[in-house]
Length: 289
Image (cartoon, rainbow, N blue to C red; front, side, top):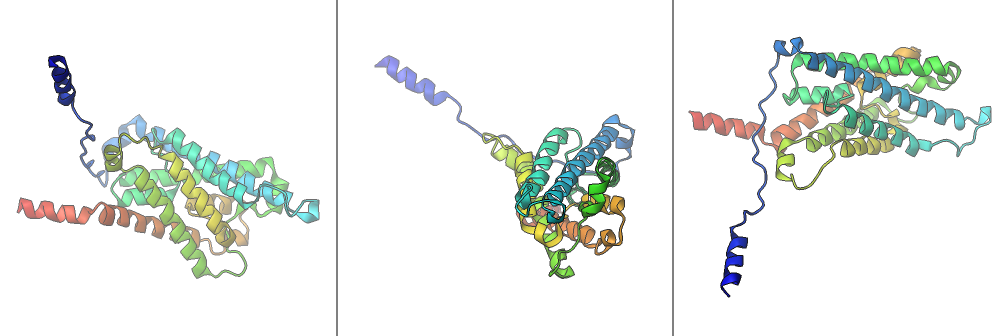
């Protein structure tokens, strides 16, 4: 009997499971000149360049391949190719792979809209955001350039993977599709990388690139029939620069304004509504006063 009592006492003395302590990370400085002297800063820029290059190379090849396989005038089949589902998988799958590979180096943005949203949320500094966007656009141009270099005839014949409004849709519809689609993506990025969530649910492993890749996949399924799906200004810009026909620049502004507006709304929603940053700041101000 004594042994039983001792065993129960020892079991009750064991510590219970508790979540990790959480502290809000400090906001990134607006301008951090010190990071310009670090190799890690330039390594991250190179990672963004290479990742965006690979992203555009694989995805634009998929789009052109699908169009060539469904071109009935060239012996194709209406039901051939990977279809819209396959194109959506190519975009979403590449984002999953590349975010997984580069998240520990640059954060795995691969999209100026994502970088812009994280900048508004004070996750990255202004110099880092600027150089990330430049690297992403240059990487996109080089990626599409490789596609044209390897398959110039197919590239020119099938439109170079350029984003444009589909017949039957007006500019307002396209702009709305880009805003909502980018909101879904950037909101998913915030949710998947939220340090508070990682601390609270530390016993539940979450692979951040997976929901981000699925968000890209789902948005492509919904908006390919409308705009060809931009939600990434670098993707649209790289295809437009290399194809460089009138239609590649026609309505091109939609694929910059839409993603940036959607990213700004997602940043505001996550930071000031879900995380109540404004209320926390007001409470801190009152307590200090």
